[in-house]
Amino acid sequence: MTAIKLVFNKVSPEKLFMGSVLVVNGGNYLYNLILGRLLGPAAYSDAALLITLLLVLSFLGMTFQLATAKFAILFTGDNWVAFKQLLYTYALGFGTLIGVLLFAFSGHLQTLFHTESDLLFKTFAVSVPLYFFMSVNRGRYQGKQDYQKLSITYQTEMWSRLILTLALLWIVPTTPAFLVSLGIVLSFVFGLIPTNFSIKNLKKKVSLSKENKRKVISFIVLTACYELTQIIINNSDVLLVKHYFDTVNAGLYASLAMIGRVVYFVAWMFVMLLLPAVVQKQKDGEATAPILIKYVSYVAVLAISIIFCCAVFPTLIIQLMFGDAYISMAPLLWQYALATSLFAISNIFAYYFLSLDQYVPVILSGVLGISQIIMIIFFHSSLYMVVQVQIIAMVALLVAQLLYFTTNNILNKTI
Image 1 (cartoon, rainbow, N blue to C red):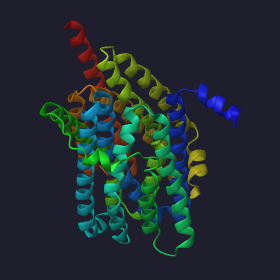
Image 2 (image 1 turned 90 degrees about the vertical axis):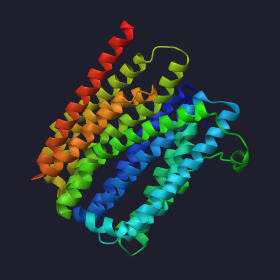
Image 3 (image 1 turned 120 degrees about the horizontal axis):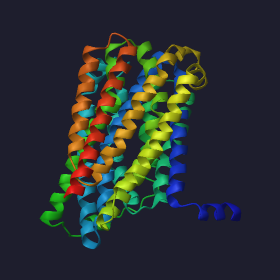
Image 4 (image 1 turned 30 degrees about the vertical axis):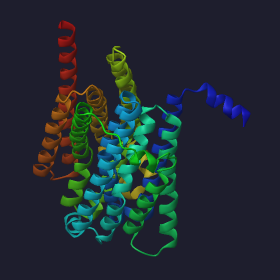
C-alpha cells in the first residue's frame, strides 16, 4: 500500500484523471461490447438507441458542467454561493422539463425509432433531472481542478451501470431494452458519489449582480448552442440510420459507430483539462494558444494511430469486439474513424474558443451539423454513403475552424 501511495503522489492529478478517463472509456466500451454480443444486431439496435440518448443527455448536461467549471474559477465568496444556487435551480428545472417532454412523447418516439415498447423512454425520462444535478456536481470538481473526486464520479457511474445492467439482464426475464434503461437510471444515483452538496447553501439569501448574472446566462446559452451542435454531429447519424434502415442494419451501424468513436471519447479527457486551464490563463493575462496547440497535437497523434489500426486490422478488430455477426462493417471502419477523428480535432478548437466566450465556432459547428443531417436525409441509399457524407461534413468543419483560428491570431497580433 505504501508503494502504491508513493506512485500516486509522484503522478500529477491531471495524469491521474487522464488514466481514470481511459479506464472509464474502456469500461463503457466493454459495456457496449457485452451488450452487442449478448443481444445480437436486432436487439442491440434498441440498446444502442438508449446509449445514443445517454450521449445526447451527456451533451446537454455538459452545458451545466462547463458553466460551473468556468465560474468556479472566476467567482468566490457569496458570488460563488449565489452562482451554485442559480445553476442547481436551472439544472433541476430544465432537467424536469426535458424529462416530462420525453415521458409525454414516449409513444411517438417508439413509432419513430421502431422500438418494441415505449417503456424504455419513460424509464429514461425519470433520470434526466438527476443527470443534470450530477453535471453541476462534476463541474464544481472540474473548475476547482479536484481531479480525484471528478474521476471518482465517472468511475462510480460507469462501473455501477456495467454491473447492474448485466445483473438485471441475467436475473430479470423481461424486455432487454427496458433493463438497459433501468441500469442507466440507477447508475446516475451512483454517479453522485462523492458529493458535498448542502441544502444550507441553497437557503442562504444571496444573489448575483445583474452583470455577473448576464455573464452566466450568456455563457450557458452559448455553451448550450454548441452542445446542440455536438448532439447533431455526434448522434444524428445513428438516429437517422435507426429511422431509415431495418433493425439489423441499424444494429450493425451502431457497432461501427461505437468502435469508430473511440478517438472522440478518448479525446474528451483533453477537453476536460483544456477549459479550466484556458480560463485560468486568460484570468492571469497569459497566452492561451500554447495550451490549444498542445492538446490538438495529442489528439492528432491519437487519431492517426487509431485510423491506421482500423485500416490495417478492420476484420480482426470487429471480430474481437463484436463477433462475426458484425463483420460486414469491416470495410467502413477506418472511414468512420476518420470522420470522428476530424470531429474530435475540431472539437478541441471549438471548446478553446468557447472558453474565451467567442461564438463564431459555435455558428460554424451548427451550420455543418445541420448540413450533415440534410445530406444524410437526401443521401442514405447505403451505410457506405452515410459514412461518406459525414467525412465531407467533418473535413469542411475542421477547415473552417483552422481558418478561424488562423485569422483570429493574425488579427490579435495586428491589433
